[in-house]
Length: 234
Figure 1: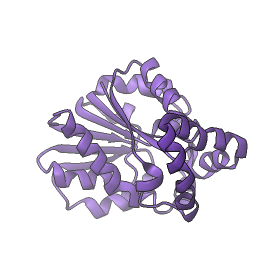
Figure 2: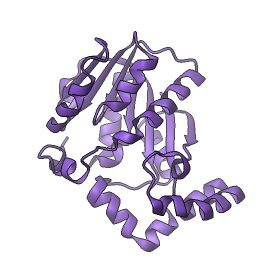
Figure 3: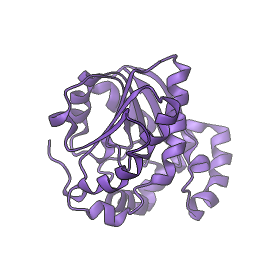
Figure 4: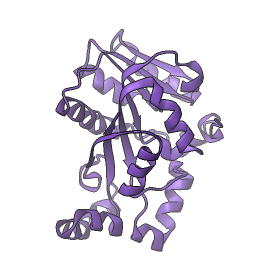
């Protein structure tokens, strides 16, 4: 499976020097709450596309006795991972292609803001199915009537953030189902209100979104965007 060069040669890091680190505690908390809601007591957790490693570093505070492993293809991330090396003997990171290097099956596999970056998401998802019992996805919902009309937001997420594919809630869920996953639960995250790194534009846009969401949440998200999806599957 071809890896985007921007993640190898530091082009992505140059465009995104903080690698969205400020979102990590928020995402880790959602993952923990979703796992606990379904009474999953993991013995091992792996994250594909772990980025800076901050999400796993947050999760180790909740799961200190659980084996946590992160994989990412970007060599530059090792500089971030050094910050976490003393957090726990159970926290480990690997540079390289998960599918070539990994030899284990995990209890829970995390793919948080990942498969929208992959050229062939179906093959990527189908290949990942054999490596865990449960899967947690966090998926940006970039595709809305507003983003299509304006187009600029879609081009921004493609060029700067690296999203090669854009999804609505239903398109994301159908992509997972078509790849062989069984959806246990999905939920909106309230991203436009709750994400730590919201821009001023996002904050200002939340008021009209809030009004439309109150009428019909699904319809409002398809119209105005501003949401992400958290999914538990097996």
